[in-house]
Length: 233
Image (cartoon, rainbow, N blue to C red; front, side, top):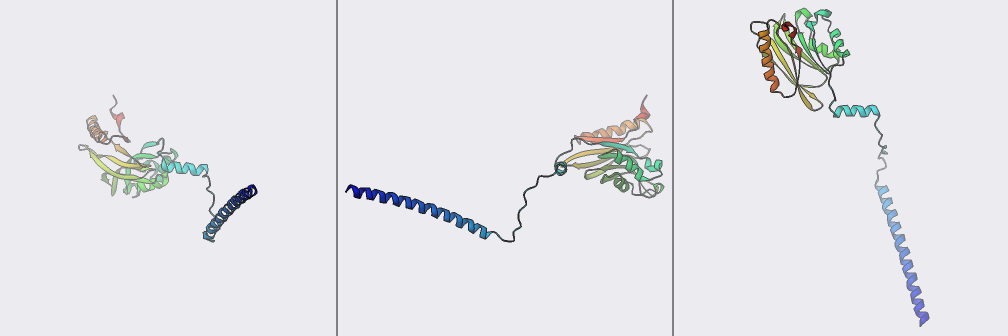
C-alpha cells in the first residue's frame, strides 16, 4: 500500500514536470511563430530606416533663427539725397547700408522714377544692393516725371504700409510713412519721416501730429531726418 502511494506520488510529480515542460515548449513555439509571422508581414521592398542623425551646429542655429525672435535689431536712418552725391549710382548707397549690417532702415529724399535720377525704381534697386528683401515707398509729392518721398527697407516681411500727410502750410508737403513689419511672428510698427525746416512753428505742429499717431500704436520705432538743428538756439 505504501509502495502504491509512493508510486502515485512519483507519477503525479512526473506528470506535473512533463506538463510544465510542455507548456514552456508551447509558449516558446508560439513566440517563434509570432515572430515569424511579423517577419513575413514586413514588405520585402521596404527601405531600411536610417538612424536619426543629430543636426549639425549650423543647422541647429538656422532652425533657432526661424523659430525664435531675434534678441536685437540694428536700425538705421539715411537721407540719401535722391542719390545725387553718388551720381545716382544706387549700388553705392545699397552697399553702405549692407556694410552697416542693418535689419531695417528708414530713408529720406527718395526719388521713384524721377527723371533727374534716371527714372530708376530706387527702392527696388536699393533692396537688391543692400540685401534687404522687403521695401515700401511713401509718396510726399509728384516731382520731375515721377514721385519723391520716403522709403523703408527691411530684412523682415512688411505686412502693410501707408503714408499720412502732415501739416505743411504752403511749404513742401511732408508725410509720415508707417509700415507694419512681421519679425518671427511678432508685428512691430516702424515709422519714417522728414520734417520741415522752414520754421519752428511748422516743425512743432508736425511733431504734435506725429505724437498723436504714435500714441495709438503702443510700441513703435520712429526714424527720420527731423531737421532739429535748424531750431537749436
